Length: 463
Image (cartoon, rainbow, N blue to C red):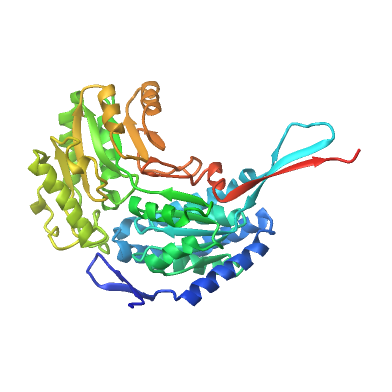
């Protein structure tokens, strides 16, 4: 059995990281250590937890240059954007730390003579976090900080594409003085990951990844009656109404579709434009996409890096070929992006028109630098098309009429509705999805509910 894990950099195909996979004895020891550490950690005050977590963020920021370079080499984000993830992670973590007191405070009930009644939120025990490669810190921190702030211990299994992220977090927690065992990580195989979910000492699982991966998590946890948080795929739509600020809509939609080479669960993957603005939108969007520079992620001038691996590029190429074969029009010439070549993860961006929902590019998650644009004649048509998806993570409308836009948002099957923006997580708002985008919630005060359990106290006072 091969007990090595290799991280192949999309920049040049080299092995960037090699790690030993955890043996069974190490996995068992990690779980037992977490259980013992959590018994002590749950007794600490929220103030003490907050001080340590803030110290962790301070230590983490001290390694910003090194972390940014690692992100670039592990998953291909252009170096000029890599530090943005560090800032975003700190923002989310600081917010969740700041609201911990409020979120974890006992719920006081109306007074009843002779009784004291309240509901307390208690830690679950050991939280197992399975994190993805595309936003390796932003996604992981959504669960890690609330779990630790609530008094849980955390075991992190990061993607094989981004293993150094787990190590950087462990290094920062250690520097902050977090007690040993409260945060640990494991590099594991898929089968060992599945088995750990089945372990009776694991009390909660937070998974971010594919729908197929989410199904595995649910099956592994079946019958255990533990909490499972699933952030899965997206095929997020944007609707540009006839009254929209077209320049804002073009700039925001195209950035939402192509940032991170389109590798975002909440990126824009399909755009519906009012007939009145359609031609102008396509013209301006095409010009903007043609201004991107596809290149090596370690080149400071690169604005569009490679996708994570060649198979991912081939998947997107297959979607484009399917759409064109069915009548779609491709607006970007691959020759204008000379680094784009079959058999590599370097992939030219693509805008497609004359598309419809018979095409895979409008229904399957692409997770790459491609977006389809459809003309619509009414709000009703746009709403029907936006809801015609197995996914429901985010949706956005561009309009100068907030009241009408809000009415549209109320009719959409989505976890988050945006007006005049997209592809952003506000840590004060609940991050959640519907349909195959998953279930559960992170961020906001509601994000603490999944990592705690309610316990009621009903005290009859002595007379």
